[in-house]
Each structure stands twice: as C-alpha cells, then as structure tokens.
Image (cartoon, rainbow, N blue to C red; front, side, top):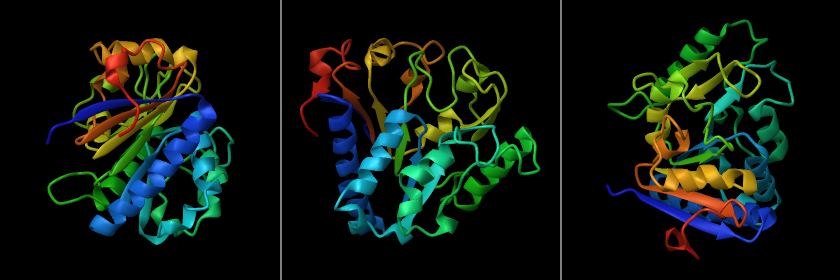
Length: 256
C-alpha cells in the first residue's frame, strides 16, 4: 500500500487542537463502522493533551462507541504511578476519566513504584501487545497513532544518535539514557510505530520548525528520528504556522 506524507497547517495551537479533535472523532466513527473496533496509540506532551481536551469538550464526543476503542501509549516516563509527569495521568485527566471506556481497554505502561524493574516492564508491555496481536504479528492493529515531535526531532522516546532509533527487532524498549529527563523511560520501537495504519504527528511552535523541515527534506533517522517514522497508509503532520515555517509550500495541504 502506498504511503502518503501530508502536512496540514493551522493558524494557531487552538485551531490545531480543535481540528485534530474533530478529525479524530469522524475518523474513529468511520473506522468503527468499517471494522468494529479501533486501537489508538496516545502521545505525551502539551499539544497532544490539548487535542485530548478538545475531544472531551466536543459535542460529538459520544458519537464514538468508547466500548470499542482500545488505548495504548507510544512511550512513558519511568516515574511513580500517580506522578503528574506520567503520560497516562495526563491523558486520564484530559479525556479518559471523562468517557465511558472500559478500564480493560486502557493499556498504560507499568510505573516505577509497581514492583517491577525497567526491563521487566518493557517485556510486560510487549506481552500485552502480543496478547492483542493480529495473526502473524507481535502487535495489535494500530489504527491511529498520535506522536509529538521534540525540537531535536525525537518521537516517543526515540532520540537522535541513541540505540533505540536503530532497534529493528523488539517492539518495546527500556530506555536508560534519554537526554531529556527523566533518563529512564519505556517506548515503542520504530518498527512498532511504523506498523500503524495512520500516524498523526501533532506539533506546534517555532522550536519544532527545524526538525519538521529536516524530516520532510529527507534527513537520516539517526540524526532526526521523526524522519524514520511512516505509517502503513498515511503519515499526517498536523502543525501550526510557526512549526511549518521551514516546510516548502508545495508539501502543505489546505485540506485532506
């Protein structure tokens, strides 16, 4: 299947969050009509959480049958369960605690105070993925994967010049040398992320412009990890004008 990379530019962060939220609701309804279930991978970061807040605030929120939605995470900080820095905690506050999704459909990474170590936590999450996998793979069918992009081009907890971005076998990584605190994290691998049907990258602000421009210009994934991320069907970049400052005009779309 041909992969397409598409960039949609929004005037500001608020418009970006509202647009992605509306698109998520309609796309989810369509996928549920098509296949009866959906697997969504959530991201951390302020813009991703603004999208979740916008989904929660939408009058169309409950057009989704949340019983049929399963949530995973792209990465997580290795901190205690109730730490406000956990992506899980932030996602629950923004959306998950407000919708009728069964707790069994929510699959967070283990936390540092849950009686396990980092390697065991990575293996445990890989086992959860395997248990929900489609035939012939070690992964669920990820339908929509949200990702943020750091100023250095990192995605999930895959950082430039770190071994994680080069991992080709494992589905889940125990990260011990993150240049962004905390040093210890858990992350889906690049192959796991790239198994996604559609990847939705959501980024805003002038500090993201260089990484986005380099990724679209064909930078190496070791230098700019986001350059190595592509969904099986679509890779969509939802950005504000500031983040799009170094994107050639011919690569942007007014709609899609």
